[in-house]
Image (tube, rainbow over all chains, first blue to last red; front, side, top):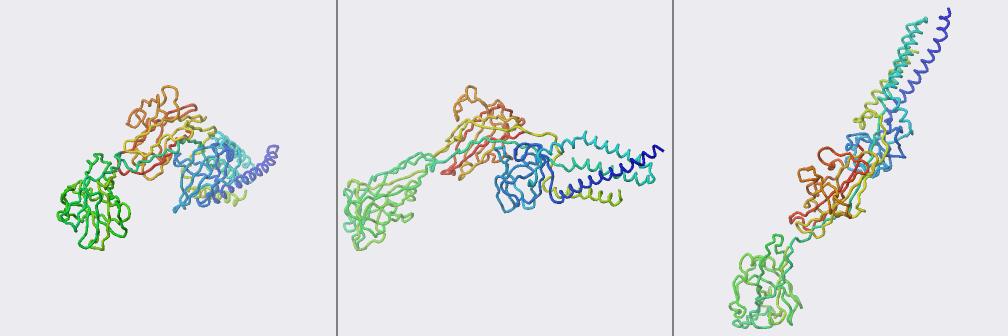
Length: 388
Length: 197
């Protein structure tokens, strides 16, 4: 009678306790379920690389969002491929919206090194929604195998006790089933903690930089300086005196006048071309220097002479033939006149150097005259060759 | 407990399992088991350059070279692995610059920054380019981020640096004999990055 009375008073207490346990577990599981459905996830922080904003042992709740929903300054969780895919929680320091997604630069608040990664439009990033300081330590303790086993043992003991108590009541079968289900729910609640809880791991880093190393290659790899050559032979030939030589004159003329045209002949001793392969000839400029006369508005032609001539015997009647290949043109003026004769000099190097003939582009004109100095005039023509 | 409560409980458990798997697959696929260790401490890496450039070439012609040595020191409390990489910019000269990075130490007292007096390379031939050499290639091919960075050292397993550890790096850059390099420029940041292991 005494045992029956004891059982009849303890049974309702156990039943209430079971109901409370089931209700608490229901709330726990429902909360976890809603968090997951809403895209939230609990993570235990294992690193102080974000301290003090997020510290080691904290529990953080992150929410899955599209990369486009993240802003600079947000704290996000992502898988860092440079850390074997570990889940890292760091602050966004730079964002670059690209065609296929977003490029992130993140860094732990105590770190000096950053991570660079990207998420395409379909990816999800865990954005910090809530931080519960130190709660991670408690959860980690609860998930230790020994604690799990101990809790399960307690549940098993309570379950056995409840089953024994239920067998003494009138509704034994129903009581046993309730006790079994309550035990099963309790075990599920205990086991759910380590299954659902994530971890964001340690990620300390630092950099040492050596900046501002600058390298510049020279515009030319050639060490040979430009050469300025003075004419070694110069004269002019005069149609008005076709057999007269002017090789000793101080001036030489280019004239465009009917029956009285004049042409200049000038030649240079070309230097040996540099053997340095980095020193090809890049330009050659023929310059005729002013004597006393000069007029603007004419176009002069410098042609390559293809036959030899002699300074002290050259005349209108024996002037050398020329070629129009690579002809160089330049406007006349009151001062010196320059011709780009690079191609002609290259031909001279490749063949024979007979110098240049300079004439008005349109002869038989109204008497336009250009007068240039010869070697004897003290201001000889020059050829400026540049290498490299 | 009413039977419908039991069913509700079972349904919730099922929803939790399914929802947890699908919703978070986007970024938790590689999540490992919750570890029991908590990391605290520091990772601190420094050098002796005072932000001065280690290497410079100006109006360089083929064969022009510059050499400099830099001392990198670790003072963090956590063990760390170090990698080398850099950031390259400019107008294309990096493809014509040969870079050799050699790890070693000073056999005597450390000279002033940039000087390689008494530099002695590590005895190990890490990459088949001579004692202590950890990179031998063009500046263009030098790694440009941590993911592709040169481990230090690049063979035999990355070392775990501990507080007080110091290494000297000798960097040498040489302009190739290639006319295509004329007038081109390059700017380089050399980076050593330490991460806790």
